Image 1 (cartoon, rainbow, N blue to C red):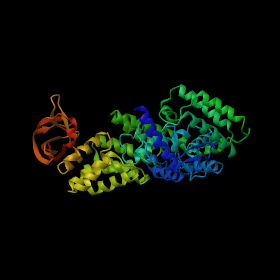
Image 2 (spheres, helix red, strand yellow):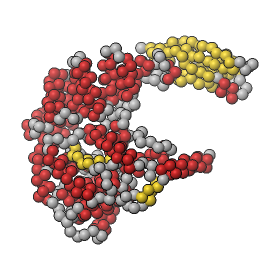
Image 3 (cartoon, rainbow, N blue to C red):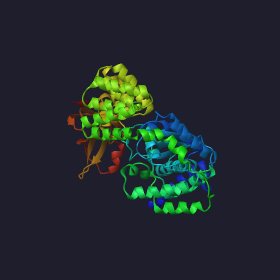
Length: 518
């Protein structure tokens, strides 16, 4: 059996190889299997760049000069890279020290990481490392490994795990979360280190800064600093081996280059000034999650006093007021957040939920639709389904519930129940599964399984079979009682003992009627 499976897999692999072929890696020069084309890489990166940024806190908007500065350095590296991609660079509004790259050259760095760096050379080391992940197709190769494991060419559908919004995002955003949080192989990290140092040296920066930065990373990892462990180190684990390899790389690079200390410190001066505000905000979020509302409110006000331009601080205030059932005050806070940043899904989501509570369904629908256009989430789709159902639009409600039902979150479970209640009476065969089995005495039984989260009753089962003369017979059995969620019932068929189990293949079953029992 194993030999047969291996043979089948080998044939599939050969077909994929013939269909797509090998190509030369533009960075390493190595020949490698290529299942994801360059145009697909660019398309995937472009499509998921927005949702990925939304999941990580959105763009850092109050200091556009900082993003322009980072982008300028990134483009200097792009000009000396080994692959011409439409590189983009953005600073995210997130305190966790992290950076990531998507296929096609879409790169992001958190403001939290910028505060941990000392100069331009260290920043170019980080950006160069991430650029290589894109240029050397590391993200694409991660997708290709998923493709080979699934035995088909897929651009989406890779499993998602280990991400802040893993249980909340739905649809294509699940792939975005996977691409951001994927762990690279040791070889990929080594390549990113080596060629990243090469890029920063070509751009005129001292590659020794990359070694010093990796040494710092190793010390921080040994100290088990939690924000690093949940950020950059989760997907880019440092090691003394990487430090040693980077030191070896120094011997093949020019022993010169600038550090750019003054220019870097000038660029992040605003970040440093506002750091106490973001620290207060982050502590306020923790207090809110623990139910310490007064403490959270005091920290939110402290953050706002330091930096009143930051939309996230108003959103924290709104979340606290929402917990206190102060709906109008919360609505005002989300309004203020959107006045300062109208391109972050969470502000629209929270305002839409509040408006729904205040029975402003049309306004709620508008905000929730805007929210899912930025980042599709379970709670937004589920609430849109509730609104559509309340307005008598059953078809739209079903579509919204179906979009939300892919999540394992509480809202996803509720959406699945709502979808079943709407759709099961019309399409019971899509939900209730029937099969024939033989008991030890050779008598035929039908098992009906209810995999849904609701109790059902009034079940009718169509049975089609061949009689002894070879004629097709049909009968309908009305099943008494109810079938609980997740349960299976078994009923006998009046066919007498069956000597040949293959006779079961001539029996067709279809659940033609069922009702949800509240």
